[in-house]
Image 1 (cartoon, helix red, strand yellow):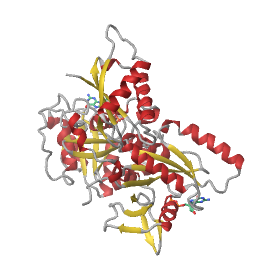
Image 2 (spheres, rainbow, N blue to C red):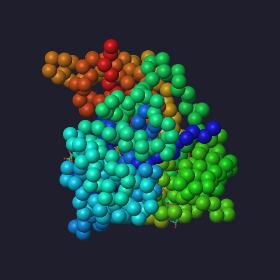
Image 3 (cartoon, rainbow, N blue to C red):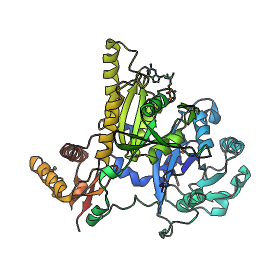
Length: 465
Ligand code: GDP
Ligand code: GDP
């Protein structure tokens, strides 16, 4: 049975200041605590995951795509935004109920209407306003019934997201949503101690590998190199273009599923990329994978698009390997220089192994795949409570967390609360006093102790009862 892994993508559109990023944060808030101490990149997020009840989704805030351009609103609704609109599963168009209808709103509405996609119109900042009066003038946009909401307070947001997802999850989520609000469920709660037996050993999982990167970095070349040597077991090409393609193959006795992002099509014996880059296809492939191979081009600078993709991978917590491709036609001076440059720029992905490869000449591909396997094993590592607790105690002996006020945080024991990425839950008291630097110290300790290369690692502090 195939898991239903492709999460619907909800795209937020609207002029600046209507509250898109406030809504985005609310729709993805469960993640905030977990990614809080990742460096710079992820703070300015445009892609995130959320879940209402047991219905997961991806949110894209198009406000982050383009810098504000002088040439008016349509210049801002540039290509990427329109592409996101074209590929979205659901579109939420946000307007400002306090400011009222503006010319820019009308222009955006025109664009959206021309896209032929169905759009949910949300009138934000409607807290404390009569819903009828907040909405009235927005009927003129011709986008159907306006939904008054307050992103800042949460009013109406659950209904809105449920409606946006209705087509994908025909039933309302089981859980009762408390009245007035609140709202987006945090991640599925980590299992308790005895939930540990639910984890299967890593070896039983197949490696679900998403190869992501900008167009022309060499993704389909790598796929062909990989498959050229191996037996393709199944090539699954569903009818609609929106469905991702999965290719199963075997190598060294291991089972892999490649999850396509490049719009691969079979041409004779080889695969070719036939579609332009798709942010959304990339997001969905990352979501559907357990290990991501981020491909970069040694011969071009790292771009914003590379950074965005990397940021989303970090956000999802998938295991990650970086392949810097086209390493073949470079001389050794160039190689030294490029290596230094990439290693410096990729510091924020410090947990990931970086390989310099040639997909075309099949150089470095074997070691790269080895790192994929290691990252996969690390992502699904099983960490027993006694071992984790011992590692924690050793870390504490070496270095106590700093005292803050009269309380010194007390950490009693640790257990594993999840896989892919490994989640280590530390139980104790006064744990909200633990600074980020100490959290990082613990992370490094666990990482080394359990050889967790290639996967992000999350640490959660929980008050003992
Ligand atoms: P964006 O530019 O569309 O991403 O808008 P922001 O999310 O940055 O919000 C713009 C401003 O509107 C900020 O000052 C927010 O605090 C404010 N804001 C956002 N949502 C609400 C809301 O529901 N009610 C009120 N009163 N203010 C809001
Ligand atoms: P995709 O869009 O990411 O799937 O990229 P392709 O696999 O279509 O490759 C884009 C171009 O880069 C093609 O002309 C490839 O022949 C070339 N290319 C791919 N891998 C390598 C490599 O390792 N070295 C060199 N020199 N060129 C490569």
